[in-house]
Image (cartoon, rainbow, N blue to C red):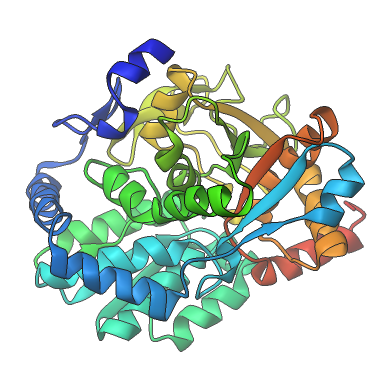
Length: 410
């Protein structure tokens, strides 16, 4: 497999049909096929347009605050007693998470296409906040769909979105979480496609969305690669990132794909454990994580015995999703990336550890990656470097963490 990667870079994917190996594609009703082709054509032109890239680059620097720093977590590493843990600080980007990178880029694409209205789905609320933010910046209308359960556990982000001018729609169907929010956003887009752009928040969905989101989030990995060489004098041994849909992880991984010495680990939500079924580990559950189609893309999907979409659970709203981006499925099939999971308990312990050792409150999503880094650090020698993508900050999760502490989960 390494020889195959040397012949053809993984960075060339997807193919012209939108596939990463056997994963990907465009499984949508006829009403959305045309708009997806329009988006693909527009992005193909803008991707190489110097003026577009200059405007995006300037806004990333002057509005988002890029580049985000690379920070060594010295006290946390010392407490673990092994490999050194470094953090790529996406929590310090404007709005508090990596989501702004994609939202800003897609909003500029939408404006270039003549769209005046942005539609978004959100789980943890960070993508909704980012979309509402760029809509305010560019003077566009914004509608955000969010599951009722997620609205309850992410109330601060709901308030932020509304203060930014977004119309937040509560979704009370199905699991009342991210899956159902995406369903409603797609319905809205199909009805209002002439003047609206669906600003999908993760590296999933029908082609060209996984490619667009990956490209826009790859600023994380490009910066990290350059910063590692400057600050460490070499590349890291291991990259670690949480994986819901997978945008922060693929954004970190992609610029390193041709560096065969760099290990890549994606961390899913193990919830209350694989055995009981209350989790969101698509790769981690071999019984229920099977090939299927969800939200327009062929990839791994958690399914029940009848092949219906299974209910998921995670303490982190942003990882509480039944499917995963197609490029992650392909990287796993090639054994270029490895995927594991952290439980709710693991994530909550990592949240507290980073708070107390480094003075950093991570998002619960990011805490899953921190948990894996802490575990690996105890097993690896002190001359190894583990780079964690700290995808967001934890202000939004304080009510959830407090409830867990008071309920005895910590």
